[in-house]
Image (tube, rainbow, N blue to C red; front, side, top):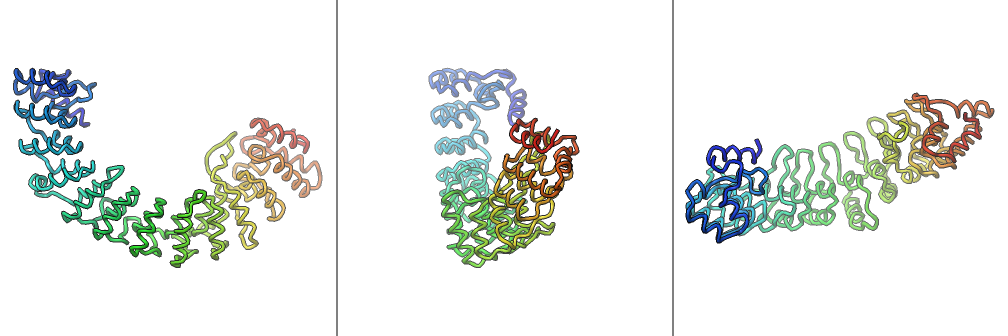
Length: 474
C-alpha cells in the first residue's frame, strides 16, 4: 500500500470529521498565515490540531499540521502547534531532518518525537552534517539495534551528491568503511566512486577504506573508477597503491573496461591512464572468460586510436574468442535492429577500425557471423566505401547470401553507395563472365521475395536502381 493510501486510511480512522477535505489548521500552516493559525488554535479541539489532510489532490495530502510546519521549516508554526498540544510525530521529525531544520528537530525530540534513528538517516541522506551530529545520541536511544554502517551506506548511495562532511562524521563515530552492502557487495568506496564523489572518496581513503575490496563481480574500486571513466579517481587510487593488475570474476581487467568506451577527442586523461596501466605491465592480451581481449573491446567501441595504441604495444590480431570471433568481428558487429524492408539496421559497424585491422596482413579473415553475413556484407553495412573496395579487391570477397537469402546486392541496394554497387556488379561480371549469369544474380530474390531492384526502388535509391537495371535487373 502506498504512503498516500495509508495516510487516507489513518485519516478515516482518526479524523473522520475531516475525511475528504483539508483541515483549516493544515491550510493555515501551508499558507504560512500565522495570524489565521493563531485564531484557529485558540478555539481548536485536540482532534482538530492533529487532523490529517484528507484531500488526495492537496500537496499536503495525508499530513498533519505539525508535519507540514516541519517540512516547510516554519519554527513559529511548530512552536504554536506544540503549545496547542500537537503530537510530535516521527514523520514531522523526519521532515525536519530532511530539510536540515535543526531547531525544529530539537523541539520535536524534546516533545518525545519517536524514531530519531529514521530522522538521522534522513538527515544523512540530505547531507545535513550538524543535524546528523545532534541526532546521533538520540538515534542510539531510539533503536537498540541502531546500525551506523547502514547510515553510512545510505548517506553515499541515495544522494546525487553525497556529503563529505557527513561521511567524515560517521567515520569518526566508528562507521565501518569495509562493509559490503546488498547482493552487489559494494563497499562505501565503490559507491562513492560510482557517483564520482571525489571529496567523499578522499575522506573514505583517509578513513581506512580498503583499496582492493571486491564487489560481487570481482570489481575493485579501481575497476569501478575505470568503468565509470572517472580518470582523476583512477590517479588517486593508483597513488594510494591500488592494484592495476587485478582480474575480475569474468576475467575483465582495467584495459577491458577502459577500452570498451572510445575516448572523446582530446581525452588526454584517458590516454594517460592507459599508458600508466601499460607501464604497470597490465597484460595487453589477457582474455576474459569469454575470450575477449582488450583489442576486441577497443574494436567494438569503434576506437581507431585505442586500436593503434594496442597494436603498437604488440596486441595479437589473431586472437579469437571461445566462439571464434576476432577483433574485426567486434568492429563489424553491425547491430541486430530491424531497418527498412526487413534488412538489418547498420549500427555498431565501425568500418574505419576494420580498415585499420585489415591493413595488417596478419589479420584473420572472419567467417560468417551469427546471421550468416559475410565480411563483405558487414563492410557494406558499415557504410565505409574504402573498406568495401578493399574487401572486394584484396580479401577474396564472398558474394554468398545470409540466412534470409539476402546477398551483398540486396544490402548495397539499401545501404551502399553507387560506387559500392558498381564495384559489386563489376566483381560479379568478373566472376561469372557471361551477362546472362550476372543478370540472374541481379534478379535473385531473398526469403521475403525481394530483389535488389525492388529494395532500391522501395528505399528511394534511384541512382542504385539505375545501375541494377543496366546490369539486367527487371
